[in-house]
Length: 465
Image 1 (tube, rainbow, N blue to C red):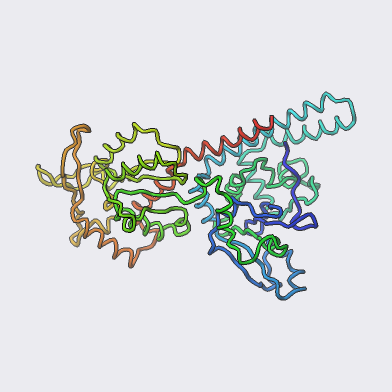
Image 2 (image 1 turned 180 degrees about the vertical axis):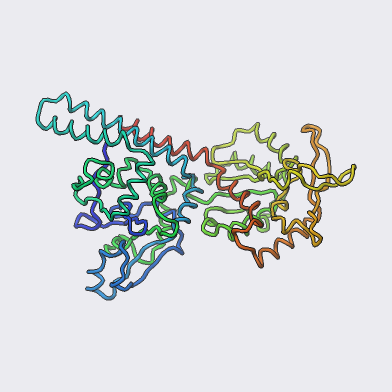
């Protein structure tokens, strides 16, 4: 099941959408866009331009002759930074660790398939059988040493030396019969699977953060497969209805409208390139009541409704949330619904509290941590530098723990509004707690996604048996 030879960029065989990491060609899709790849871009990433033909970047240089012949032609492509693409892939579950596991599983299964093919030809008695057995023997030897590390290092060599994939099949050159030669002889640099997010996520590791991912659709537009003005991102979303739960927006449910507002504003400021991947429940227009009890009921309702979006129910990190978790543990939730809590914070492990015994510093993680305690120390500290204390409000007998609530919530929210109006640098420690909260959302489906990515390998090869 060796990958097909690398396809030429533009021949009379068809038109191509081409994926580049700056001047490193990654792969192509014939006569259409790749729905997964286009999902990594937003409409604002689209570029339609008539460039200076004398300064065309490498990915667009092959259009020079056509542009010189027709002054009305424009190039159409999507472009954004590698750092943004990495974040978007991570949100979709393609973090480095599961991707490395999936890549090596794909290679292992491809190696087994190649050995089976070699074995079949070894039993033949013709000259062709002997040549084919030798061919598969060489491939099997290369695959036996192909790992994520050797693949990334070989890709760096290809990039640094300006090597190009062979348009007509087997690469012939100084790297023949090596990992580099094998990668140059196959589509997507020898990755044998159908999930192109896997090699793309690894290819990013071979490049610098300052580089860009370019998805060039000019050839498709010039060939009238698409109009230049078509929103290909929306086209991709519409076409992926069958895979809707993974690629559509993740719905985030919170305990109240303030939580939703804080998270929405923080996401827009800290990770603007990820905001289109999430949708927060609109309390104002829906008339939905806040509180841990209502959130629990909505989770139950969604569990029985057959909703196809991924849904994250984000609870506070307090006693009431712990009680709600007990209730929801008795329910069989579908795989696309995740229930999570605000993460523990070091600041909250020794935090001022007020109770019957007076003022006392205690660990309020798990018993009194609402979203206001994650707004940053610059918000939590008053003009005298003192942290706004938590006050104990009740006792839960089933859990044997108190419930607390930070004082002056409205004042803290006002301070946060002022912080948003003149925000400190997004690299400032003032945002660390909210980044932890957002990363909790980003990783809510990590294990499920990892399982799905690895399962696709077995599914592909078992189907072929």
